[in-house]
Amino acid sequence: MSNLATKYLGLTLDNPIVASASPLTFRIESIRELQDAGVGAIVMRSIFEEQIREDVSSMYAALEDDMSPQALAYLNADLPMQLGPERYLDKVRNIRREVRVPLIASVNCISPDQWVPFARKIEATGVDAIELNVYDIADNPFETGAAIEERHLKLVENVLKQVNIPVSVKISPYYSSPLNFTKRLERLGVGGIVLFNRFFQPDIDIHRMTLRNTPNLSRAESIRLPMRWVAILRNIIGCNLALSGGVHAADGAIRAILAGADVVCLTSALMLHGCTDPIREIREGLCRWMEEHGYENLAEWRGLMSDKDLTDNQGFERAQYVQLLSEQQS
Ligand SMILES: Cc1cc2nc3c(=O)[nH]c(=O)nc-3n(C[C@H](O)[C@H](O)[C@H](O)COP(=O)(O)O)c2cc1C
Image (cartoon, rainbow, N blue to C red; front, side, top):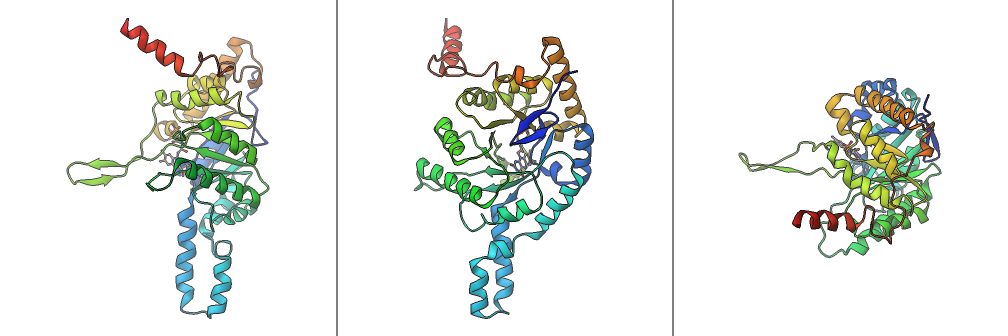
């Protein structure tokens, strides 16, 4: 019988299948289904740093009429800690009570400012780790790429100072130098890097001429982008790598682990096919494949297809592209 157990963020998971952040990981019913199907870990839907701040500012506005300036000044100094969005925390506590598998909370964030102490409140709920979803649309023409990276690193550094539980960072594929950036994240002490967050892309309704907000789910082919970067990073980065994007079935999970992923994160497959079937299919498919290939545990074959030498230009780097285009032209 194959052993699918794996370590992620210092936690022991029964298997490498993680239900990544989405509405499914915020509802008790779907969380029960995920657990019954045998998911390895659950990342809760994110709270947005704007939510944390907004809660703070609306509370502040409500208090303004009733309080002395001195009391307000005191509160203002520590507002995020005192008036954070309790509803989210309550939900996390309830889910924590329900969930037996490792539970990871998630914050969707971009700035290293006053929301950061809220991380301590999240830690106090008893979650096993925090995932920071750095979901940033670079919309300031005066901020350079280097300045954006510094802001993100500062944010991670500040959160790491607040908590003792492991912290992972879910990054976008749009950094100019993912190797350099992830190396710097690792040096700060993050436990894992999630590749990649999937930016919600608004659409245009041509009849009403309005923006249309519908979720853009991945397809199985979408795995190639995160898989390339997992394969490239595997031998550069010592911390955990989680592949998020395009894992729809066992075949995708096997490729992700061959590239070097410690865990695979799923959302679209669960939204398309329900919480139970994709998880069962992936678990069974992983076991079958390992038996066929004579592997007893994941460590024996994880990263076998990772990029071992980034100087030979042969693996997941530019060479394959050059070769493909040259073949098509000849
Ligand atoms: C409807 C929906 C909601 C999501 N909500 C979150 C979220 O709250 N936080 C987050 O980090 N990622 C969120 N994601 C991204 C997923 O966690 C995941 O990284 C992404 O969808 C790629 O995986 P997939 O190809 O399996 O869908 C969401 C995705 C979808 C489709």
